Amino acid sequence: MLNDFLFRCVISNVKLFKQITQAFSKLLGNEHAVIRFTKDMVYVGQSGVDTALKSWLQVSVDTLFTAYRCESSNNNEVHIEVSMEQLYRAIKSAHETDDVLLRLMKKGAIPTLNLSISTLSHYNSRFTIEQDVPCRPQKQIYVDTFDQPAIPERNVTVQLPSIPKLKTVLEKLRVLDNYVTIRANWEGKLEFSILNDQVGVRTTFEKLGVQSNEGRDVITSTITLTFVGARGTVVVDSRQLIKVFQVPELSNRAFIGKLALLLCRWSNRDTTGICNNNCMAFYSRSPRPQRAKTTI
Image (cartoon, rainbow, N blue to C red; front, top):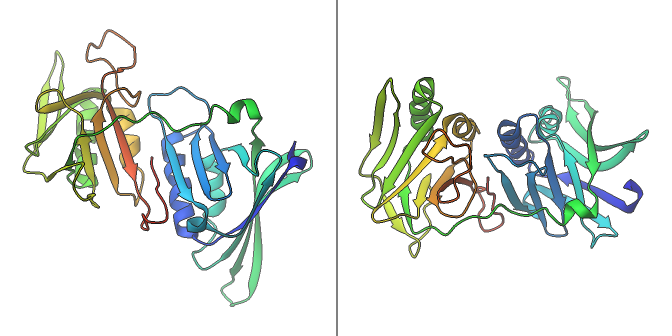
């Protein structure tokens, strides 16, 4: 099957490539990701696993790569399944100034993503590090089902407090309960709370900035909500939510909306069904939004 593909490129933005692979390694853990290389765009999603936490990324080719060649019998697209944790470990040995060649190859009978890293030693002499990450080209039947998770419309944007502050709050709440209730409203109020037979705790952030969808996009961290009345409410698995806040160096945006299956369960703890009425989704945009849109 690998004979039908030709893929090679130079990773020109090593820093962003590291951030992307590290983010997915944090979010997916041992689960694999599917990477779709097309003529102009690169897409990353989860490998057909139905989980509460869903991840998706899209970025333009010229944001990450130069000398890009992607050829196949499938409309010149290449789809592979790979461990982002292993890919991150491979790219970690590269520096921002290094030349990194990325190729789809075969080592014996095993398809691999090969990283050829040209770097300088302490004595200022150049040498090459070869890293091979096992991967699996995707059949067309799986390619057809690869798509972005459904994302609901949002009506209002409320600016988030800093991610480190939110992470500290969630770490403390997680000790007391696995689920946290999050509420937000048009008045710029954002609330995190737990309530069970043993304890009730509530943390509130007030006077946060609010913006409608018609206004200019907020560059800082934001939360957007689709609400009933003046408030949006969602019950989230705090263990899954912590994974999002562990993604480093990314400016997160979130919203509470309808008709998506992200991070939510019914507030009735006795049921195990996914909540179809509310969700919470986090976004991260690249430093150059005019050239790329990166969504996690």
